[in-house]
Length: 538
Image (cartoon, rainbow, N blue to C red; front, top):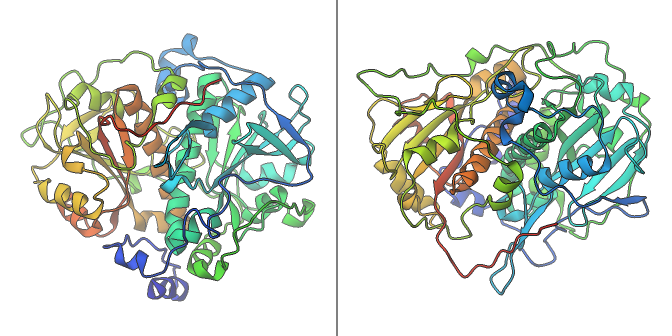
């Protein structure tokens, strides 16, 4: 690993760390912090001596999960809600269903008890969520807040509307406010060391993806900004930019999207114009941050001074397969499905338990299509001025599903009507065996399907420089959260796992070394166990 970091810092193009571990021994060799002991950070960031506002209970039903998708908004304009201003109830609903506590594990085997609305490695949840209100909302004054999911409360960090400097630094518009997802590295790096950078980038994408779903469902369209002036945004939030740094900015309610090209990077206000704040928060973990110095170096190399130029999405994506002699589209896959209540899907979303042994009747092709249909919807973001599909490709290895033959498929088709198309006839059994060997806690051989999201690392470096690693992992996280939510609505669990042999997957897919798998999502029906996870309802 040290050689990887050395190559990064010594290369002319700052080649980013794209290498996926080919074995867990590299991770274990670094030494790991002990969970449940003095090394374990607090599960929730808590500030001292600042004003706190307890939010009202969120709505139990919030709307159609498809409302944030451009194709659905265009086809069903009368069915899409629209809020011109937030009230406390809507704000509570947005924050809770984005990143609130959804359920809790009880009993002697509850080693990871607190589950939020997105999956997280060992439930460390290193992403922190900040809200900047442009104007007062009920008793909440305009200002910058930190969201405390354990108490469903906001802590006021800085009063006042969103500063002009912050909007310019992020390219955000004049909407109702901003959501900022940060990565507090210590919460994962105490155990995963430098590898935590990958996990934090993935989880930030999943949180942002969930925020876009929740914002669309309540009628506040969101737009994500991956490229921004890190120094300005971190300074405005009171983050040190080393142990904790902003990863993504979501512009809430600026306008329906697309809203034009990203802003220019020239002429941004200097970070010094935003007054610095230093805020005390509880941090009992005392592990020396030098234990993950490689992570810090990688993150600092990814700094930007502001929004960048529009990208060409075609540079990132493989040619889509077409039905023909080599394969056939799934019959009926283009039919418009019924609505999906987002709160209901998030309430039942899970990762299959600590030991995921799928059971019961295998899912059928309709279940898989329902889980994957919206995975490749364009993401409202800062990559281009028009609808831009996610900058990742989705490959699906069908293992055991009724109505569809086992083998490799690609997600293809127009937004809102994506279908599974059989890819070149390649044997996936070796990949399934490898997954079972690398991650014995997940029995992929009993799964219905395994989704691999791949990214072109060279295109990422070419367009984003060292930021490319972070951007493409976040893009993949947005897609993975969509799969998780719509899989839950179809009665399936979706387990994210990073335990796989990168080279073997690429070989089975028939892609070159530039194309790397950055996410694996195992889909199957959860087996009933003695694990007790009551939902936290309002």
